[in-house]
Length: 200
Image (cartoon, rainbow, N blue to C red; front, side, top):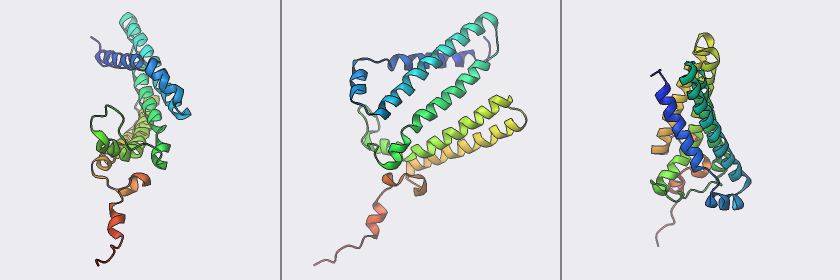
């Protein structure tokens, strides 16, 4: 079996499953009827690219099995999937930064409200990390990971890894506060600084 084919088959299956799960069933249609424009945009950004990426990967697999072509399409599909996921996450950024995002975990969320708030705290840093990694990957793909493009890939991808580590620290510890959106910052420090009324 040629290198890269097992991974491409796995990704094709995962994107096909995601496309199937996002089909406009009854509950999805009911949600779309009451959803805000941003919610409808997020749904479109979820369902359309999942079908496109699944189709591209299956067609590329068929071509590789028939004519034994290279894996250039697979590399582009990975870059496109990374960019898609980053843009989809970025659609929630405005709500998180302005405090309009609900801090209550959605139904079925395994780690309940505490884990969901930790995810929201780290969301901006995670999105920045995603953009850095995607930009580095695209620079590497365009340059064939050689010359200046290769060095850009190394620099941006390393920065993305560092930002990912910071996002993990923010999610687990709530520090540093500078990286947390103001509406999500803990108010414990403010309460400690508030003078208590004297006992009577």
